[in-house]
View 1 (spheres, rainbow, N blue to C red):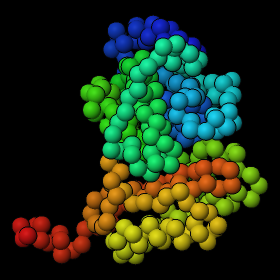
View 2 (cartoon, helix red, strand yellow):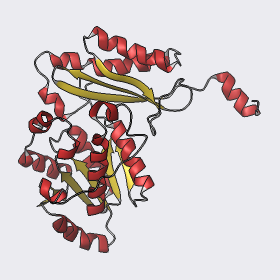
View 3 (cartoon, rainbow, N blue to C red):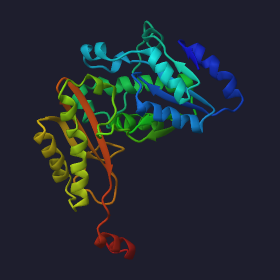
View 4 (cartoon, one colour):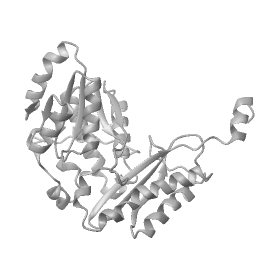
Length: 297
């Protein structure tokens, strides 16, 4: 595996494989690699001839300076893990390479960026995500780019970005990877203080409660979200939000029946802010299915 620091260096490294028709896969990361990232790299390895992993802690998408300063950085560790998972190239640029002096362009994705994380983290958060992803896709020009389901709203923003700007790349999604206790893997988990790890399990349990409500026949989105909030409250965890939304637009839904919905939750556990989500689909009611089949209104 080669480590490259410059845009020109990465483009040069990809020139010959691209000319020869190689399939190029891109796995963008901010480092602090865990099994969720590694599952994406392994998936890219099975489908692509050249696997590029990016390692760039994007300063523009941190709304708190302390959060940026405390973000874990260990390039040697991350490089070893990426290589073992199957990466061919590691693109690890300095901030000045991505944002040179005079950089003044921002990519904004409307609608899907406005709610939930957009409200919690500020209007500039998803603009920062969209801008850096647009740059990475333009720099590497991959055939396929891999992202995780855990950052569901970010994923929706990226899908809209690619669609609206006609970028010739397919977005592949990896399922959320969880620890044995059910907590979604995140670089932030390492910052959970003593005792907070157990409290953090309220997030996956809240999603389990939402899933159970749907399985039990509940179709009202408000009641499904309330079931999840009850679990969080019992653990002493106050959520930033618990919402049932349409997974591509993040528009709120009132009723769950037939079409996939996303239950999204964010909460601060101690000093650490965590997010999680789950896609749910409730069976279409028998009467509605019959009406559709017979053409009845």
